[in-house]
Every structure is written in C-alpha cells, then in structure tokens.
Image 1 (cartoon, rainbow, N blue to C red):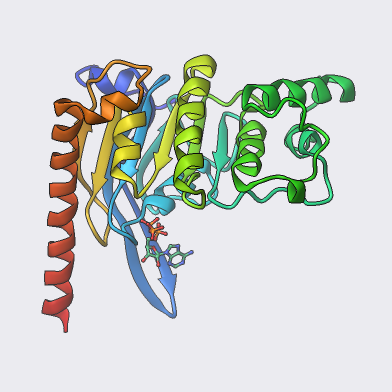
Image 2: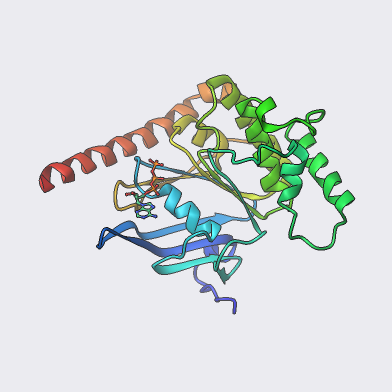
Length: 277
Ligand SMILES: Nc1ncnc2c1ncn2[C@@H]1O[C@H](COP(=O)(O)OP(=O)(O)OP(=O)(O)O)[C@@H](O)[C@H]1O
C-alpha cells in the first residue's frame, strides 16, 4: 500500500526516494553496531544526488538499503511512495568492482541483466544490449571479452548493464574509484551525458569532492560513525557542466564549504576516538 506523504512537506511529495529517520544496525560478534542513525534524505525525479563522508560513515550501507540488498532497521525508506522491500528493476546498481562474467562477450554481459525479463525476444534483448553499449561509447566492442578491455571499458559495460532495463534510479557506489585520473574524468563526462539522455535519478557515492560537485544537483555530507546527515548542499551551476566550471569562484565556494564540513567531521571522529581510549 502506498504511504501518504503529508501535504505540508511539498519537497517530499515530489521526491522519488524518501528516507525518513532511517537507522541501520548490524550485529557482529554478538555486539550491536549502529551504522546509520536517523538519516533523512530525498532524491527528486531525475535528480543527481551525491553522498560524501568519512570512511566508514555508512555511505555504502545506505546505498545497499536503497538497492534493497539489506533491510532497514528503523525508519521509512520509500521509493515512489512504496516501502523498499528487496531489489527491483526500477533500480540499477553499479559498484566499484565491475563484476562482469569473464566468459561472456560484452553484449552478453549486458543482456544477462535481462535474463528474467519476459516480453522481449532473445534478438530484441541483443538489440537492447547493443544500443546501451553504443550509449556508453563501446560500439564495435560488443563481442570483446572483459579481459580484452581496459578498466574504464569494463566499467562502461557495467553501466550499460545497469541501464539496460531503464531503471528510474541509478545507484552508483564509487564507480570510478579504481580508474586512473584521465579515465575517471572521461567517465564523469560520459555519466553526465547519459544522465541527460536517460533522465533517471542518481544516487552517487564518492570520496571525491570535485567529482561530487561537478556531477550533482545536490550533495549530502555525512557525519562519521554512526552516519547521519551533517550537511546538505544544492549545487546551483547550470548543466551540462564542463571542466572550466571547476575553476569558477562558485565551484571553489562549494568545495570550501564541503571540505570544511568533512574536516569538521574528521576532527569530531578523532575527538570521540580519544575520549573512548
Ligand atoms: N554486513 C555488515 N556487518 C557488520 N558491519 C557492517 C556490515 N556492513 C557494513 N558494516 C559496518 O558499517 C559501517 C559503515 O560501513 P560502510 O561500508 O557503509 O561505510 P562507507 O562510508 O561506505 O565506507 P568507505 O567510504 O570506507 O567505503 C562500518 O563500520 C562497517 O564496518
């Protein structure tokens, strides 16, 4: 049953993803550990939202909750008004590790995501895989094996695989973390182009402040352990952006604000570690 969002919160009404007081605890070695504590976060339709924060603050945990790979412990996590209850084709996920099947061609890796989809024929699924490989700039490499491709190319295949069933929300967990600086920049521009064409929402986890500002409509900065939302910032720079935008006063202003918050979180974390010792 769809949960009604209260009228007095219009920003929640227009959001495709609503996290309200989401808490996640893990039990490990007989001890309970709170990874996320009352996280409030929204993503509007077709909005690009990044999640930044110190290592271990729960960014990946949050993304896994939205992907439906783990259940929340407390709070509300709604996608289009419905509680998230397991994985679904309305969400595509890209991790840092490409996890392609090495014995399959690039196109077969993409089409594999459609394995359980009834409707399109085998030939149509192949056509869809070819279409998305072209979208990510891999026309001509459809029959390459993962081992014959660079890291950047493999990640393009993984992105094509996540997009092939046209998810409404793309979830990306440090997708460019393993790539060299130049490939990473190319992939950021590719992602911006895809986002413009595919018009899906994006939840993007990264450690890279420049990357978050460059790509996002909004950035959330999380506090160190347990993860809470420490700061939310709207990036009011026109899109699509290009590299010159990173040299503007506006960009530097956003960067200063975010880095200051990250440093604040780091010192709070160190203080709490010292107090515990
Ligand atoms: N399955 C699990 N069982 C127990 N603890 C877990 C599990 N998954 C994550 N955690 C713990 O939850 C906390 C948050 O982890 P998470 O990986 O979400 O952080 P992160 O912000 O993504 O870190 P990083 O930036 O280093 O990738 C960590 O303390 C981690 O050890």
